[in-house]
Each structure stands twice: as C-alpha cells, then as structure tokens.
Image 1 (cartoon, one colour):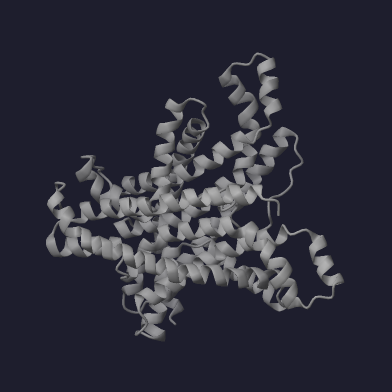
Image 2 (cartoon, chains in turn purple, red; image 1 turned 180 degrees about the horizontal axis):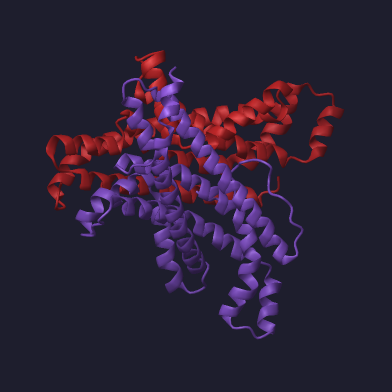
Amino acid sequence: MDFQAVIESLPRYGEPLLVTIGVTVASAALALVLAFTLGLMTGSRRLAVRTPARVFVEFFRGSSVVVQLFWFAFAMPVVLGIQFDYLIVAGIIALGFNYGAYSSEVVRGAIAAVPKGQLEAATALNLTPSQKMRLVVLPQAWPEMIPSLCAFAIMLLKASALVSVIGILDITWLAGLLGKQPGQDRLLHYGVVLVIYFILAWLIWTGMRALERKAKRGLGIDAKPAKGRLAPAVAEGGAL
Amino acid sequence: MQTQWSNETLREIFPAIWDGFLVVLQVTLVAGVIAIVLGLFVAIGERNGPVWLRRPLGALFQFVRNTPLLVQVLIVWTATSLYINPEWSAFAVGSAVLGVHYASYTSESYRAGIDAIPKGQWEAATALNLPARRVWGAVVLPQMARRSAAAVGNWIIAMFKEVPTLFVIGVMEMIAEARAFQGQHYTGAVEGYTLAGLLFLAASYPVAVAMRRLEIRLAKSNY
C-alpha cells in the first residue's frame, strides 16, 4: 500500500469537503424548515390543512432517496419544466425534501406528546393559538425532538455522499477520481473518506448533545446526557 | 438530453424497469436475511459476549452505522474485485454490504428490545437454574421479538428503499436499467426514473401502513 501518495493528495480533499459540508448543511436547513411546517400541518385538526401535508410526507417517505435524487436532477426538468442552473440545487432539494418529510413525523410526535394540562393552562390564561404554540408547546417539545433530529442529520450526512453519482464534486467523488490515478491506492482513498464522514457524524452528534443539554436546562429539566453512543433514536416511533 | 415526456418510451422501458424492480426485491430478500440474523448476533455479542469481543464489535458497528453505505459499497467492491476474488458478483457483494450496513441498525433495535426486558425475568431464569441456551431461547428472545419486531421491520423497509445505491457497482436494479436504456436509445431516463419512483411508492406504502398497524397492535398487547 502506498501511503505516501495518499498523504500527499490529502490537501486536495479541502474543497470537496466544503461541498460535502455545504450540501449537508443546506439540505439540513431545508429539511428543518419543512419538518416544522409539515409537522405542524399534519398535527392540525383541520382536514384541509392536514391532507396536503400528509400526502407530501407519504409521497417522499414512500419512495427511495436515490431515485428522488435522479428524478430531481434529470427527470424534473422535462416533466415539470423546472431547470436549475446548478445540479447541486437539485441534490439539495431532493435530500432536503426527503429528510424533511421523515423529520416532520418527529416534530408532530413531540408536539403531540406535550401534556394536555399545559394546553389547558394556556387556554385558561387566555393565550392566543400562536402564543400557545410559541410560548408553551414548542419550548417543551423541542428538547424531545433533538435526539431524533440528530439521528436524521447523521443519516442526511451519509446520504449526501449520493450526490457524487449525479456528478457533484464532493469527497466521495474525489476519492473515486484519485483512486483511479496511477500510483494511487483506491482502497486507501475510500478509507480516508469513510474516516472523514465518521468524524463529521461525531461532530453533529456532539453538537446536538450540547444543544439538548442547553434546551433542557432552559426548561429546568435535569440535563441528563443522551445515550453514550452514536446510535439512531429513529426506528422507534415508526420513523420509516 | 431528452426534452419531452413520451408514453411510447414509457411502454418500451417498462419491462426493463420491471426487471430492475425484481432485482431490488431479490437484493432485499438476501440483505434482509443478513440484517435480521447478523443484527441479532451483534446485539447479543455486544451485550453478553466475551469481554474481549464487546468493545471491538461495538466500535466496528458504530463505524459502519455512521458512514455512508455508498462508500462502504465502493470500498468493499474495490477490495473484492481487485484483491480478493474478481469472480464474486456485484449482486452478492452488494447484498452482503447492504445487509451488514442494516445489521448495524437492527442490532440497536434488538438491543433496545433486550434491555427493556424486566430484570426479574433474568433473575427468575437464574433461580430456575436454566442453561444459557434456554434462558435465551425460552425467556429472552421471545419477549425481545415482540418488542423489536416493528422497529426491525421499519429498518427492512428503509433498506428496501436504499437498494438503488448498488447501481454504482453495476447491480442491475431500476436506476441502472434506466441508465442502460438511456445509453442505448438516447431516451428513456425521464420515464425510467419516474417509473422507478412510482414502483417504490406502490410497493412500500402498503407495507409501511401494515407495519404501523403491527406497531400499534404490539404496543396495545400487554407484554
């Protein structure tokens, strides 16, 4: 194995790393906005609000993120006549829509889990519906969402590797390119990329834990650290 | 680049996409068995295995769980096709990697199921002097199975939807079929991708609804 060649080409990962991080952060932001919008909508009592959100969620959860990626990149311009100047936008939208649909269930579940008495107390205090949501429900539901949202953020990071197959120059793409060059070891390059992803996943997890502690402290709940391992809190709650 | 939707092309590409769909089902079957069985062994090994095994096993599967399937598929395929045995098919290697990747998830669901069994059950089994095989076979696993069934089922559905990733090593699932058709006829990718998405939707939605029912039923039954 030729470690020297791999070490010398490490600086070339700098720019693709920014692409990987950029795609992940952008689609996570989109997913978060969608998660809250759809989560509030699917939790609504009004059928006219609930139904379109439900359809959107089931549509994106029911199909494959890989297929959606190809569809947004190559089929949507023809079918819907919408064309992006940059393919990366299609990638971000596909990932953001898919994970936004999944995460909306987390938001809906956490809101539904806020004790009824809290809502009744808010009504008794004559709070408006938006005050109720903003001041009473969301501050209590938010810390409960963080572990599951963190699990989805890590899954999103992992899924971001898929954008390399539609031709976006992220770290997975670079490993494939460098690995084919003479004097380079493809296995080592893929290994380097795996380690980079693991470190990024660990960073997300660490950040989310700190966020969870802070959110719980704000509520006066004893800030018990989350599970001491990088594990998904997702399958529970029928996330898929 | 194709510029128009064509029902003609849709009819022509359907058999190819359908073949791809059957491949997806076959991969799901093979990888699903691996994920269900290996996940159980990993969960037991990490929890009750020999002490020297627990940490390395836990670390290995934590790494697998937190790195992209796509890169794992690429690295294992590179290793097998260049160094180990070039005869191994993409189908076999891809299914194995997918199965191991999802075993890293199912093992967590099994672990949660085992952890949720009341301590008294273990103590009663010890008091009855049951051999380890009976403790697991007659006491722990049946109770765990009911607790973990829905979660593991959900992971299998998720896995089913990730099978298309394997097109990168040449497994002829739906994306690969659509790309091959496009390469040959200079058209068809648009219809192919759309069809693939709809087939996924048609196949996974009823299963997901059934899983949710199962989840509710298991939650209601007193275990």
